[in-house]
Image 1 (cartoon, one colour):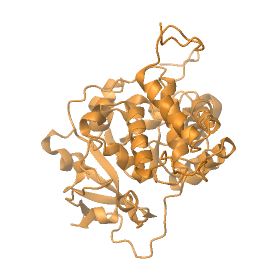
Image 2: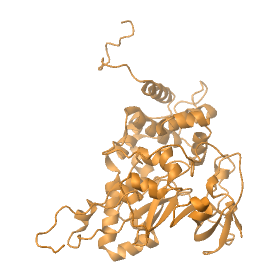
Image 3: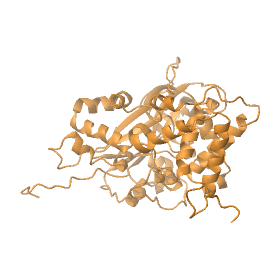
Image 4: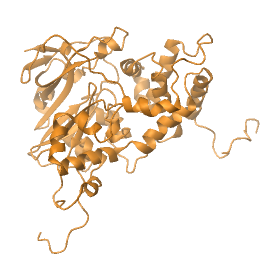
Length: 210
Length: 213
C-alpha cells in the first residue's frame, strides 16, 4: 500500500540525528513492547508480513507522530483486537503461549523464509528489468521510488515467501527473489548524487522484462 | 492526595501515558494467558545484554584476518556467521557486502526497520527514523556528512534497501596501521556505524614511535 511507511525519497524529515552512546531502550515500556510483540507473534495468529501491514495501516498522521516502539504497540493492539485474543470466550491459557525456557531456542531458530520454487527463473543476472508500475491496496514490499524504473538483475536468491500474499492470509505463494540495482540518475534524474546506485530485493512478480 | 499510591516505590513522578498503556496491555495479556512475563523478561535480556554489535565486530575482524573465512562470508554469509554462533531471528538470510576503495556500501530499510539482529542487535533510533529512511536512498552523501563521514568524491556509493528477508552486514575496509593487530584488537575498532555504512572503523590510537609519516 502507498502508506506512511514507504519513505524512500520523501523530504522534509530533517537531519539524521545519531545519539552518542545510545541505550538499547529509552524507556522501560519500549522493552516491554519488544517482548510483548515477539511473544505475541509466537502465538501463531499472524506472521511478520501481517505485523508489518498492521504498522503501515496506521493512519499516516498517527504513524508519523509516533515513535517506532509506539508504532509497534499500536499495531500489536490492532492485531490482538482483530483476532479477538482478549475476548472473554478466548481459551485461557493460550495453547501456544511462549514460555521463558523456550525463548532462547525460539530466537536462535528464527524463521526460514526461503521456499522451493519449481519454475525456472524468469530473469538472469545482468538482465535489464523494470519495476512494475503497480499500486496494490494491500501489503507489498516494492517501494514507490523504484516503480516504473529500469534496473539490472544482480543476483537471484531462489524462492521466498511472497509478503503480498502472506500478509493477507493467502498462503506463502513463494516466488523467486532478485537483487535489482538502479542507477541513481534513473531513480532521481539530474538531481541524483553522482556515483550513486541503489538496490532493492524484489520478488519476480514485481518485475517485467525490458 | 486521593490518587497517591503509597505502595509504589517512586513518588516523584506519575507514570507517563505510554508506560501506563503498555502496562495495561501486558496485564490483560498475562491475565488471558497469552504471554508469560518471564518470557518477556527473557526476550528483553537477550537484546539488552547478549546480542549486539560486538557480534558483528567479531565477524568483521575475523574476515580481516582469515582469508578463507572472508571468502566463505562472501559466498554464504548465513553459514559463515552461524559458524561463529550468531544466527536466528532477523538474521535468517544474511549477506555480507564488502567496501572497496571504489565503492562504499550503505544499508537502509526504507519500508520499516529491517536490520541484522544477530550481528548488530536492535537498530538504533536514527536507523528507524523517517529522516534516515527517506534520505539514505536519495542523498546518501548528505546523510553520511551528518555522521561526519566524507568519502572521496570518486568513491561510488551503493545503497542496499532491505525490502525482503535478506539482511545486510557491511564489511568495512581494514584500517591502515593495523598490520600487527590480532582479531580481538581489531574487533574493538569495528563500530556499529561501520557495519551499517554510516561510519568507518576507528583508527588505532597507538602510533608506534619512529614510524615515518
